[in-house]
Image (cartoon, rainbow over all chains, first blue to last red; front, top):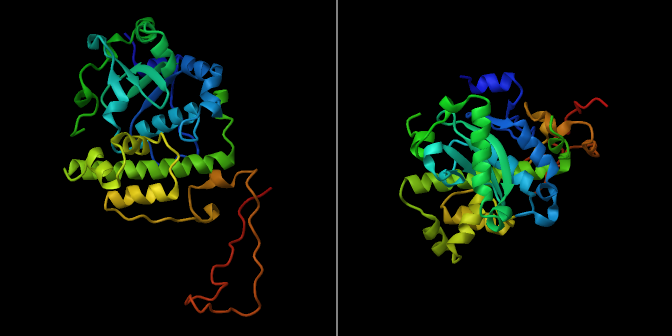
Length: 161
Length: 136
């Protein structure tokens, strides 16, 4: 049995570092798997201005959502959804044009493991399931099963927390 | 540090910071109205004469809003807006804007005698440029 902190110590996760232009103070923890950074670096679409939404690249939208998760007093519940079947506790974060998969280890916290382009999830109907299984595989490999917080958005964002 | 995080230049950072502030404040303003039960995305859309999806896209940052659009959103929320453009060298915690690569501070010509503008109670050189803290 391990903890998220053990995974950080083993260098499979890192706390998400806020970009230097973000002036707000963090109020929620967010961990990112190194394989997600590798995926981000390897996907040219994330950095292509031709695919930009609102004059921002998909990576800049992702960065903005990570910043909002860490710093915003309230995080839009629709941007963090449970994946089916909900018994596994895997959730997807939804920045513009992207899907980021992970799980919540406790209220007001998220671990991001892998990602996919939204358009790829529309063309490949099994991609969401594959990514969900990737998250479950990561959790199992690092013995983090007991850290999965299940339940709806009230469990993740309890009103009196 | 992952390579994708090294590519944002200072010019882009100012844009990202500004858009994040605007959208973040719009979302928080909307959330306060929504929690109070006095506004929904549909009611804002009706007030502005646009589709609800347009309001959603503006709140979620999916559009690069014009100044006019920002003002309309603020108006629809019955809020006011205040803009502040400042020298980051004068504010604690803003050092990322004055890293190497930032344009050098503009040196202003000082008139020999302070001259009061007919529209302003302050002399035109009342706001003197501060000494630069950047060491090259």
